[in-house]
Length: 249
Image (tube, rainbow, N blue to C red):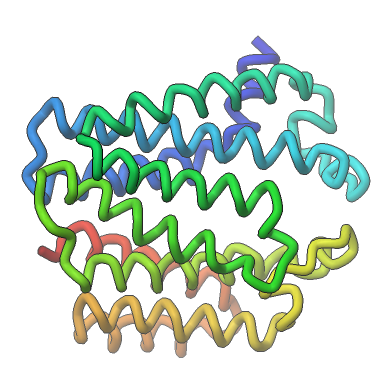
């Protein structure tokens, strides 16, 4: 049971479930058939699990060095080899599951997942660390729409790219100091907390603007009222963006 629990925790279950739910929501709104909706859910979940497991496997030594007792590999809940095997199995499953939605859609999803793998493997500590998020969050919605089949509208791709870019900065904000201490020098770490916070706000507001001008005003109010908790405010704006991304058509 401890191995299963450790594998679940190492998969980064919260973002895995969240991104899968977004994919399912988009599939429903864009009129995918029941089989198509199931195909989207299976492909996205497999992809997200692979990304989480690869992340924890690659970061195992860094997490141990920084005293991350919440991480299942360093604290002994699950063996690194088991996480690596889980990654390989889920990564292999992503390919056929992606192509259940069609050839072009399948390649779009593999682009999204491949971008996330590239982030974990190399780009996380480079000046272009935001690029995998930009690509993945645009290619993900494109995957759903291409499987209809239909042509993804420009605003869907633009909003996804902006949301993903903002999510990268927002996700990095709480751990900037720890990341620098362990040698991670991605774009947020190079810019520092002030400029990374500004980038988060600008990108998430831009995503809202692409989707709905009224959402910009609501998002701006949230950010102004929550100056003492900027990260939580950014997450609230991101949630608004995600809901609009699913519901706008």
